[in-house]
Length: 462
Image (cartoon, rainbow, N blue to C red; front, side, top):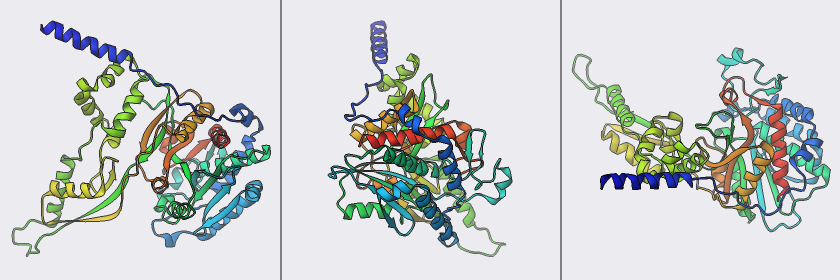
């Protein structure tokens, strides 16, 4: 009897794994009027690289203390945009939001609905102690060895310039979108987005704009950085984690140094140890489970056995994922002082959990700048399908996956009014990724051409 039972289980497991295969693509309706090859044929990649190089030379740095920002650099960059992209500024309307965020509107032939394409042009500071470690100075915009180097090359001036280049290419062909296209270039994403994306969201709401979806920065196509025998993955992020800084304050009575006492630092240390030993619950549920199920369908048969039969192997899979720090970030609310909130969590419940875990009235908790996790956008919408299709056309044989952004983006505000998608249309490797907010930030010239092709193709479907 036991043998028959085990044989039956094995049959079910293998059957489910065999048919655990990727779904067919969602039809996208309208198609491009130009192919990626046609767009690439009229694209001057040298000019695109030169323009990004020039843009990087403007140190549009957003500091935590805004008093350190230099408005002159932001104003100079805006003037440079007008000079460099005259067709865009002639044929699209432009609104200045809080002086430095730019909201362009490309009037559609039928203005019943609209889409929003967004990027930010502010950048994080460069640690002065690392400047000597850069191959090329961080604000030189050097073009060397097939790359454009400097702060903002990945995050996120490359996307801002690619949007301007794509719009220019299409304007030169005489293209007119069917529906309105908004293009946002924001100036304060690195420090909270209140004057940029939040203000844009409020304006679109007050203007009663029927925004179908938006696309903003997000994950890249990760080359040779995915587990298993799979093609490269293009993570189109449909949600992002919230952010919460918790200040823990330990209380203890002061006494003379000769008298025994439990010092405040010891109380605080004990609280931190409790938080470390009891992290917030995670596991493969909700968005995390959807991501890994879709990814596993592209893996080897042996790997597919696990996810196709989560009813049997889920505890083993959860344990394996927890052991991988990069995956662990996607599965649970992380950190002890600076907390990133998974969409399955919220600020209030997290704070209550921290209090229960510490279980010490001598520890005070103060929430600083809490931000809830975003809403989860649809993966069956036309916007997701159009973005996925353009990704494959412009970037080749990649797997388009819904996932979540671990850091904060402008889209946490856009998500309040529409489905939001977060994807940077570039192929990067581990070495490229190390420059993100770090030393030797760079983007390849080929990637800039891909990004322009992607955005131009996406605009043509509108």
